[in-house]
Length: 321
Image: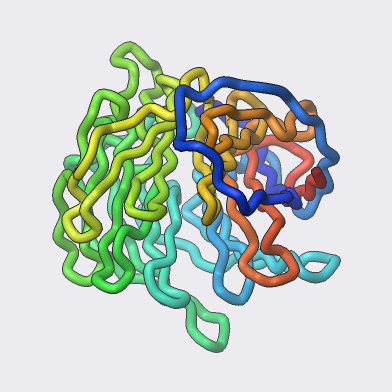
């Protein structure tokens, strides 16, 4: 992770509906340049870390540089940007995942922006629930003091409220019960660990669950991977697969037909991974510096729009392909 200014983007995407062959050893095939349109620019020295979409289409954006969640309505210009929730007792907010309607699990803790370092022992998972009148209420699900640096989060089983949380420093994935607060390491593999000599260790980072698989990125090792899991225990039921190498990625989104759109962070691009094992940069350049996370819209109007948070101007943008 490197400190830049924050930005949010939107990318209209043409998504294929015909799956190809099973994933292979990912190879870059091309770079496609697209136009970027700004939606919102945060103040200087702000780091937008993660994004989730509420069922009404509102964007939720977490800040690594402040313990805040922002709400952004992307449907009308000028876009309505509001502080949705502010946490006490921490410095940073990271991954966000909805596990019941308008109930989100949120990773919070301390990440030092001055020296770009994790602060182990400060991380916990919180519940943020949005009410019908637009207000938010929060409560702690569990602390994980053994965690070196919690990052991405995904819902494994919404019926039983089971979450998976990436620990970027320790290179493991925690299984957390949102209703019970119980926690245990569910996944551990060399494809998840960071480099031991990294000044800012970021192993397993983004994490998503789709069709019985857990997909994850490893930022230090530049890997995109997946593993089949049991949807109750979160334990692996198959081998840990490397889908792509030399694949610099932070958080990402997985489509229903298996395509993966990944924020390239230090690579300054957004990547599209194809189900035949190839990938391409679909946007990048000076208008897209330091993208950190992506999410597709949830309404009919923006289902093919990819929203992107980033760490550098111009802010929230829209990119057409």
